[in-house]
Image (cartoon, rainbow, N blue to C red; front, top):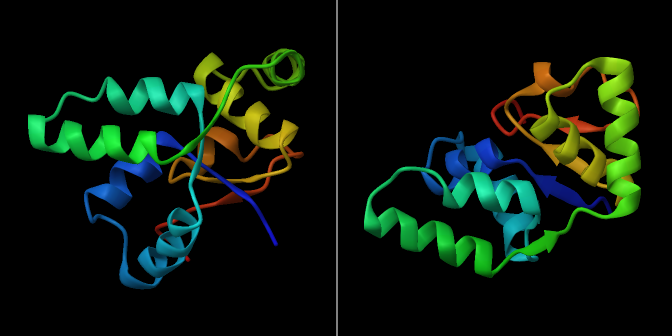
Length: 127
């Protein structure tokens, strides 16, 4: 069974009910089995400027998630991604976290990641 790493934009879209029905069912299954996120997504999501009510929803989501830390392996993959593809640091960290942990990245920003050959990507808006 595939494992998935959920990017910040997919978290925000999912919790904001901005994902189409069939895609929402797919995301429900992933999230019901404990979502996986990068430490960077935790920072991005909790830095999101939103209402107190939405902040509680975001914090609960993060609390219920497996959070993948920045390890030496992730850092080394990240360095190579940045050297080869000139990828922005946040995107390179998220991509390298997915690669190091053999996960498929769920993101709506496919263009930011599609040049990284080792990375499998799913856009939750086009399932």
